[in-house]
Image (tube, rainbow, N blue to C red; front, side, top):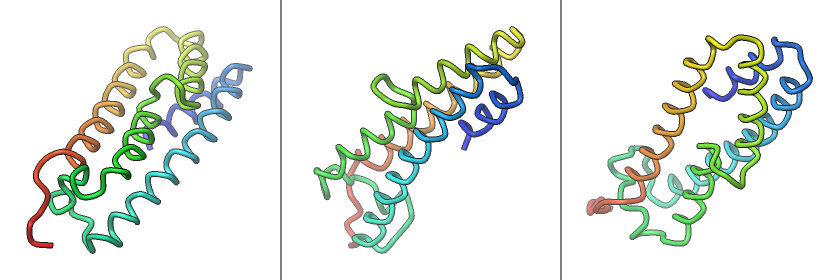
Length: 133
């Protein structure tokens, strides 16, 4: 969701890299978020709960799905071989050419978005799984 605010900002800057970055980030976000929703639905169908505490330790319960969670979460963090990284780089260039002051806010948005994705992956995949299943 935080990426979409950068998309709107890139469109409002009205330059070439803003439009290209917005387009790339929208495609990357669509692929990444639909994959995460698909995996969340698979977890819900298996465990019949959406609670993060009950879904803890999924790496022990479904190890093959853990790889997909990692790939999609790293794509959500804009890690290297992803469309989100290319889109964010061009959008950050576009927004910084508009105003250098926006750099602080862009750094905070990117950091907290990546931190939340990393927290979500580590919280759900690692740990002891819920024994009340």
